Amino acid sequence: MSESLLEAWNRPPTIEVDGEGELLEVAMGPHHPSTHGVFRMDVVLDGERVIKLKPVFGYLHRNHEQIGQTVGYLQMMPYTDRLDYFCSLTNNWAYALAVEKLVGQAVPERAEYIRVILAELTRIQNHASTIGFLTQEMGASGTPLMYAFREREKILDLFESLTGSRMMCNYMRFGGCRVDMTEAHLNAARKIVTGLPRFIDEFENLLTSNEILMARSQGMGVLKPDLAVNAGITGPMLRASGVNYDIRKVDHYGIYDRFSFRVPLGEHGDIYDRYMVRVLEMRESLKILEQALKDIPAGPFIDPKAKIRGFKPKPGEAYGRIEAPKGELGFYLISDGGTSPYRFRIRPPSFINLTVLEDMCIGQNVADVVVVFGSVDIVLGEVDR
Amino acid sequence: MLGEGLLKGLGETARNFAGSFVSKERLTTVQYPEEREPLPEASRAFPFLVYDGADWEAGLRCVACQICEKECPPKCIYIEKSKDKKPDYVGKPQIYPAKFDIDISVCMSCQICVEVCPFEAIKMDNQFELATDDRFGGLLYDRKELARSNEYYHKIHPTEAAEVDARLAEEKAKAEEKAKAVAAAAAAKAAPAMAAKPAEGAQPQ
Ligand code: SF4
Ligand code: SF4
Image (cartoon, rainbow over all chains, first blue to last red):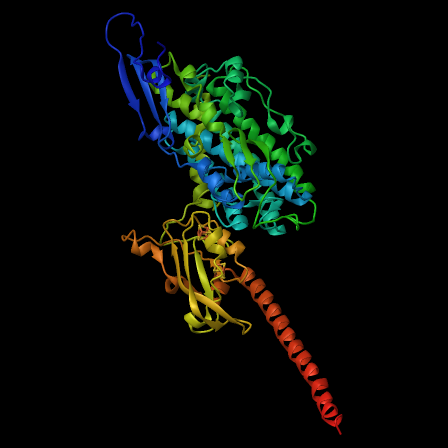
C-alpha cells in the first residue's frame, strides 16, 4: 500500500550515519530571529552538517485567496498590500494588471509611467534591505542594514507623501492610479534617483570585496540552473543561477519595452551571485528611473471612464504577472460575472522560491542555513498568504 | 591582500560616523517622541466624520447612505439609520446616522470608505497614537468620538479640504439655483393659472 502524502511528509528520515553518533532534529523557528517572521525549518543534523531540512509553512496564513473570493474587486486591492508588505506597490500593480486584462481596461500613458517609477523605486528599496538582512544574518550587526534603511526611508517618505501610507500604499486602481504624481513628487523622485548611485557605491565599498561576506557566501547554497528552472524559481534567484529570464523583458507588460536596461546574470548560482545580481539590478533600475522620469508625459492619471464602484466583469479568466522584486508575482482570476471573483489565486514568488531551500542546504553547516535562507529573499506575508 | 576589503568597508563606516556630526544627511534619526518629523499632508491613519458648524451632532455631513459600510473591505463600519430627518448642507432634509461605529482594531486604513463616500462626510485622520489597554471598548469608536470639525480637516489636509469645500460650495450654489428655478417655475405656472382664473370666471357671464 502506498503511503499518503501526509505520512510521507511526516516519515522520519532514514539516513545512514557514517561513523558514530545520532541524528539530531532541531526545530529552527517559528520564533527565530533569522526567519523573517514566523517560519519553521525542521533540520536534521549530523553534528553540524544538515542532512534533511523540512520547511513548515503556514504560521502567518491569513486566508487571502478566500478573502479575494468573498470581497469585491476593489476591496481586494488593500489586501494585496499585505502580501509582500515590503513591496506593496508592485503587488498593487500585478493585481491591477490581472483585473485590467479581465475587463479589457486600457491604462493612460501617464499612469503607466507612474507605475514604472514606483515599481522601480520599490525594487531598489527591496533589494537594498534584502542585502541588509542578508549581511545581518552573516553577523554584520546592523551596519549595512541601517545604511540600507536610511535610503529606504527616503523612498518611503516619497511613497507616504504620494499615497498616504509608507507601506500599505493601496495606490493603483483599475485603469490608472488613485491620485496624480505632482511635479513636487516627481522632483522628490528625481532627487532620490540622483542620490542613489552614491549610496550604491558606498554599499559596494562596504560589502562587495569584504572577505567575511565572500567567505560566507561564495560557493554556498548553490542552485543549479536546471533545478531552478524545474522548480519554477523566478526573480534574482533564477538570474543568479545564470538563466536569462526577466518578465519585464519577456512579457513587456506596461511600457517596459520603451526603456533600455540590461538583465544582470550570475554564473555560479551561489549566495554571492545572488547578492551581486541584486546590486546590479538596483543600478539597472536607476537607469529605468532616469529614463522614465525624463519622459513622463502629461495627461490623465486614470482612465476617466474606469469604474470604481459596482465593478462586475463579464465571465472569463485572466492571469496578470509582473516581475516583482522577488520574482514572478501573478494573480489569476476567474470571473463568473459576479461582484467578486469565482476563483482568486496568487502566485507568490517567495513561496515558490523557498521550495528549493532543502536542496540548497543539504550538506552545509547549520549556521549557513540561515544565510542561505536569507539569500532567498522572502516575506512571510507572501509565503503563507 | 587579505583584509583589504574589510579595511575599505571600515573606511566607509568611519566616513559615515564622522559625517554624522556635520551632515544631516548622514544623521537621519530623530528622538521620537520628543522630536517628531512633520507628517506629509497625504498621510492617513484612521477615518473620522466631518461636521460643519459648531454642533457636532447637527453638523455631521453623513447621511447614513451606508455605501461605506458596504464597501469597507473588512466590514468594520456599523451604521444605523435615524427614523427622523434633519437638513443637510444644502438644506435638504436627510436622514442621519443614529449610530455610526468604526472598529479601529479591524480598520486597515485603506481609505476606500473615503473614496466611495458621495457626500464628503468621511475623511482620513493622521492621528496614529491610539494605543489603549482596553482592547474592546477602547478601540470601538462611536460617532461622537469619530466627529471632527471641518476646521480640523483643514488643519491636517489643507489642500484637499479646500478642494472639498469648493466642490460643496458649488453644489450648494447649484442646489440653490435649482431651488430658485423650481420656485420660479412654480410661480410661472401659478401665474398663468391665476391669470386664467378670472378669465374662467368671466366666461359664464
Ligand atoms: S460616511 Fe458617507 S458613505 Fe458612509 S454612510 Fe455617511 S454619507 Fe454614506
Ligand atoms: S479605512 Fe478602509 S478598513 Fe477603515 S473604515 Fe474605511 S474602508 Fe473600512
